[in-house]
Length: 314
View 1 (cartoon, rainbow, N blue to C red):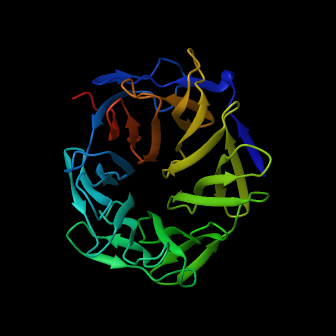
View 2: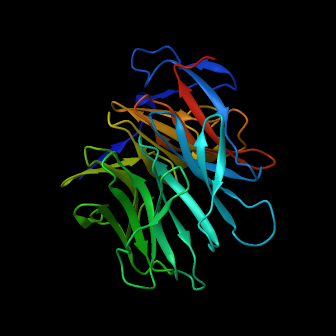
């Protein structure tokens, strides 16, 4: 198992502004070009998070319920111009995690009363149809979809409410379930995304060292760790192998603020990504094949979903 340790000499900073911006001019600058930052919140106007963006710039995620009572979380589905809430009937929460190019989103919902009772992985087709997937693990475990590829395969997690067990799986509508192996030496392995080449990214938690992101393809696993960070995690991957995630620790450029910072890893070059109006919290969670990014930032009032549209200065 290899480890990528991001060091200052291999880091470039991706500049972001509220309007059109350009990555710093370096020959190795990752995905250099113009980006446009767009805030995409939900209809409730409450805290929102965008966790998926496809090549048509459709997005998926979730928001908090601005009202009182259930459901506490509402799935979000739409595009960069706006989103609509998606709610599984009778659920206490619904969450969408990713979206493929057919406009199908994967996620999870809770319809039972116990800690994990009735927590199932779901697919949403964008036109009102919600499909509940079979559970990978026995009754009493939470089952949640995290990604869906162009063939309709779903990557997901199954876990006990106390995390005494945590499993990762792939569900193929034609072949059923297969197991995703844990990262060697990790006490927890959490898979978050996969591309059509069967490359999986996620987070590996260790007993004696900080958590790290990972990229796994077959028997090959590489850890992605930011030096000095309290933890690092990999959240999204596209077909080119570009990876996004976030870490908690000092920023890699002055003023070295300890906070949550997004990162983009492209051809071995890691760039930090901080939304200018964020207050200590920028998460990158999805990247499409065009290089568009999606995630969440928090300011003094709330957390917001956002996208960074590459090559779009309008």
